[in-house]
Image (cartoon, rainbow, N blue to C red; front, side, top):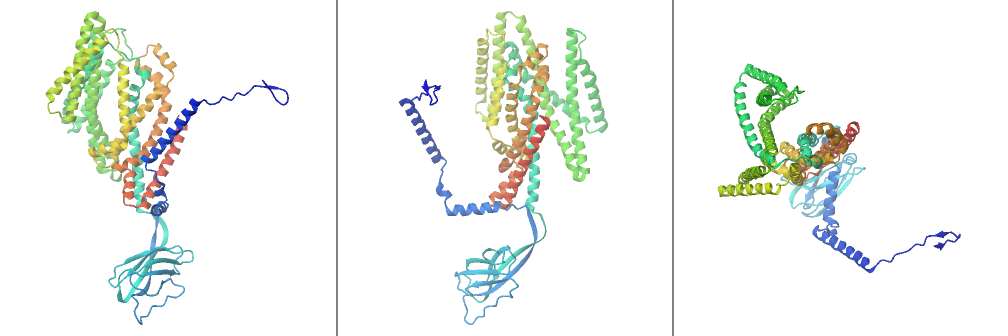
Length: 618
């Protein structure tokens, strides 16, 4: 210990000298960073010579001054013309006109006459303060040749240096200065009105994309949450039969939906039959649905006959529901068209109802296919579980090998069909046969590798596939997606809605799933301990914890979509970006400045609104 001046002890401070090895390492890291940044300057072509270029500085000044004057308001203008007679070249004995009275605006050229292409000075006096306009040279042909632009000062004077054009003539020619004086109250320019319409289009484009994205991102987020999918397992026999059941069930559901659609179209021509069919479908769904899905089971274990009866009733309810949806879609289309004809300026309401009917008409087939696939897959999965529990181990292995080969071959065949549609193979039969053999071999391999395992982690497989799809969709920017959708649906905001929706699903799916993964495990375990089903666990243990952050993420995503919609307009996605892109290409920077100003205002308002809504809701 060392002694301080007042005699107290203090710990000794030991200064460790840097070793040669650490010094060399630090120097090497510094040299590496220097090389990396030097190469970065080369790759990005950083050049301060361009910054200091007078031409580029002049161009930048011109653009900044134009941007600083957004084309939002304008006035009615009174045009005032001031003329000066001149001789080009000078004529002997020619009389130069005298300037006007001191109270009126007049022009003076120095020298008073000159030869063609001679440099002159043109001065103006008694003009309106801070007025501006062009100066023209008008020869005998009366074709205006621009000499330049002027702007008077506070004293009403201006001076410009210019050259006379090569238009010699013995007769007197004219120099003309044109000023435009504002009068009356200001009003919005055509650019401002166009900007207002496009900014409204942009906001609703982002709104629709956000809503559609939420509808699909919420269910996807549960499949992309590892803590929810980790515990989902299934025996090999159950998994293979479930895989085999999905395409069969989807095909059956699509066929049934097509048959019901044909039946519904025969009834929609008659209003009475339409209403009668709609009412009958509702009654059937109500009464059979209550019997097929009772709120409380009277028997702890229903008999086999009761189960089969309820399954048959469920099929009837599903058919009636599809019929009801088709009838409802047809009624919406017809009603929307009638409203569109009679609502006048509110015809968009009728068009919206008609569009909802068309969307529902398209979705019924998809809904029926997914419902059929899920139902048939679930039924076969239960059969596989029953086989797993009832068969001896040796027979279970044989069944797993057979079912695994069949499931692998079917998946490979579907993939081969998709790849053939995409790449158009010359020898599809050979490719299809090879795919079936490879798929069957992989299925057998999976059955062999999982022989000693009672359950296969199906949930992790679904989680991995979902995450991979979300990552791929998110990696491709909305600007690229809109190029694809423009080819499909044409240039306009609809392509922008589709592109932003796809990107929103991927982005929100990731954010939502990560929030699900970070929930507290306590409520989840407590609900599971009560014997709740998986759906009940999600309803009562997961959703209450994720609602506030989901709302926060959704509001933030809407803000992002508003800003992104200005960019996708550059590729034909509609919104204000399309108008901004046009004005930039035309070098109309004042009009582009009006659009940039509108974008900044909307983004700022969105930020304040989202902050207010987040404080109220979250």
